[in-house]
Length: 369
Ligand SMILES: Cc1ncc(COP(=O)(O)O)c(C=O)c1O
Image (cartoon, rainbow, N blue to C red; front, side, top):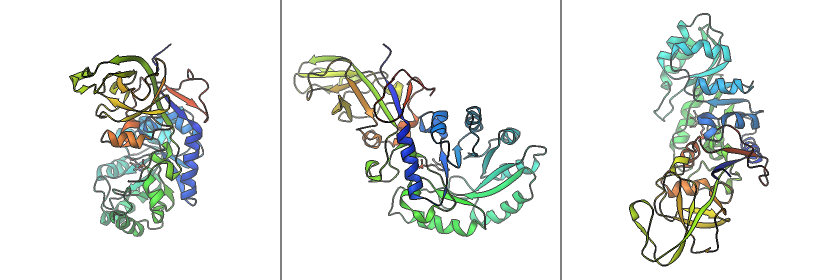
């Protein structure tokens, strides 16, 4: 038997979450954001399940080419565009659209000769102040792109800074700043939070990421209440169960002391697998489907668990770190981070095991990470 840590990937849940995108934004085209290895779920796997979306959003030419190699024929957009002029011929060859956010990219397109024309998305900074052209630069940028032989279709996009907070006025002002800049071109603003909480932002295209994977993009809202289903369940198993005496220290640093004689379990998962090292004692995991507190420090390959509520637990019993029955958002909040980070950090050494909803029948069926 191999190490029991694995990430189960529920294809039905991914399809269900895409339906939620369409239910909320029925008139918009969908660019499924699958960058960062589809938020840790496996790029090609996710793209295959989401095959009928209108486009995919990735972060690099390499990710775009991986999708093309996997047989994806839908439009693909590089959300940060290209990083050097040398990438432009590759974009043309693989028909990868580029987000243009910077003068140097514009100049590179103007100097590109002979490359197959590519679609571009002009990124506009409507208030996030990360990347994008300032609103007053946009008319000039559009005019230059229209004159460019290396450019096919032109669209415009911006990105929200605070859309996760329904009560923050920044989002409304970003929407208002964006609308007049579309100038008859197709536009896109909404990420997952925009899709769920800001209907005025839906426009021609929406760009869901985290909601596709079943985590909540909104502060104070549970994924379950938003009718989102977790796609990934990170699971492992108990590999040791010990009786410990009152006062004995558990794990690195010895800073967790048994408050009484008790049963302590050890599960085969740790920060080397992407489980957050900063998860504090008390962070919930499921042992045999029952909430069980983490104790001691997270090691590279193991965690220790307080089994006082189920001293009958034994080696081999299933342990769920997040996913079905335990929202990744809850674990992330305990560890002082966000679901995005936990999902993206699931390590390459964790086998991804796809299944079609219901129970997993063959945990040996794997896909590449
Ligand atoms: C440009 C862009 N659009 C859309 C998304 C998807 O965002 P979310 O995962 O919050 O839906 C991202 C993710 O960071 C992004 O960078």
